[in-house]
Image 1: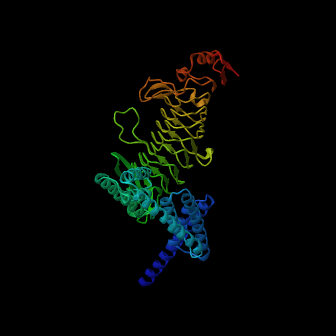
Image 2: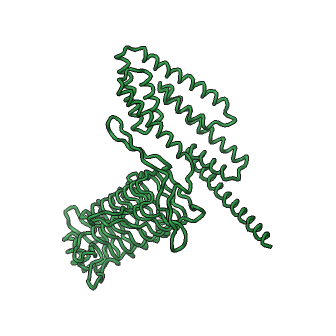
Image 3: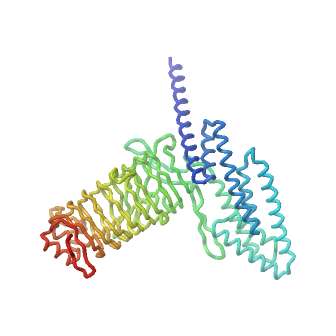
Length: 511
C-alpha cells in the first residue's frame, strides 16, 4: 500500500511538473512572438530557445525558431555589409561573425557568402597593417598612436571587441615605445577579461543569482541581494572608467528554491546597473532603495503589489535609505497595478518620469497615500490622481512641469510644498479640503501644513495659478498662502463654491 501511495505521489508530481514546464514554455513562445512584432529578433531567438530547453517542443516551434534566426542573421549581415562598404573592416568582421551564430540548416548559401566576406575583410585588414608597417618609423609611430586612440574610444564606449582589434593592430604596426606597447597590451588583457565576463553572463538567471531570506509570517521568500551584476573599473589614459557587467535586463523569477517570492527587500538591486525589470505577480511589497541608483528604462509590476516602501524623509541630517526607485534618470513611464495602496517617501524621486499611470484604469486604482517627495524632481506635465487618494505628503510632486491639476474628492490632507515649483495654472480643490482637521488636540489646516511641526504653514501650490475651482466655505487656514487678492475676493463672495479666474491685471473674477 505504501509503495502504491509513493508511486501515485511521484506520478502526480511528474504530471504537475510537466504542466508547469508546459506553461512556462508557452509563456516564452508568447514573448518571442511579441518580440517578433517589434522586430527584436535576437530577443525572440532567446525566448524560443528558453522554451525549447523547457519543453515540450514540436516541429512548428522549430520552424518558427529557424525563421527568426534567419531574420536576425540577415539584419546583422546587412549591418556588416554597410561597415564593409565604409572600409570599417574590423567592425565588419565582428558583425559577420555575430551573424554566423544565427545560422540554420537551410541557410548554407548565406553562410558561405558571409564566410567569403569575412575572408575578404580580413585580407583588407592585413593589407592595412602591411601598408602601415611599410611606412617610415615616424609614420608608423603616428599611425600606431592614432590606432591606440581609436581603441581607447571603443573601450570607453563599451565596444570591447573593437578595442581589442585596434590595440592589437597598433602593436602589429609597431612604432610604439616600450611603455606604450606595455599599456596597449594591458588594455588588450583588460578588454578580453571583460569580454569573457560578459560571455559568462550570457545565460538565464539561476537561484544562486539571488540572496534570500524566509519570511517569518508565511514562510515565503524575500530577495535581499542580486548577484548577477558587477562593476569593473579600468584606467584609460589616466582616467578611471567604470563598466557595468551582468544580466541587466532582469525578469525576476516567481520562485527560488521552489518557494514563492513575495517581497523585494531593501536595497536588493541597488546600484547594480540593471536597465529593465519585471517584478513577479506574487510580489506584494518592494522595500526602500530596492531598485535605486540604476539605469532602469522600463519597470513592469506584478498584479498583486500593495506597497512600495519609502526611504529616509528629506530634511533629516543623514539619509540612510533611498526611495525604492530613486535616481533612475532614464525611467520615463511607470504604470502601477490596481492593487497598490501606498507609494513611499522618495520612491521615484530624481527619475526621468514623463508619464505616471495609477492603475490599468484610473478608477480601479486603490492608492490612498503618497508619501513625502515620492515624485519630486521629475518631468511630469500631466497628472491624473487616483480617486481613492486621501493623503499627499509634503513635496510629493514638487519640481515637475504640471500645468493642470484636479485633486480627487476623497483627499483629506495636502501637506506643504506638494505642488510647488510647477508651472501650475489651473487647479480644482474638492470640498473634502475646505475644513480644518484636529491633530494632537490642535486644529490644523488640511492644505499646506507640516503636521509634524504644528504651525509651520507653507503653500502647497505655486503662485502661478490663474484659474481655481474652490468649494464652499473654505476655512481661512486652508488659504493662508493663497494670493491675498484671491483670498479676499473669495471671502467677499461669501465663500461660494465656484470657478475663480484671474485676468491679466491680477484681478480675480467668479464665473
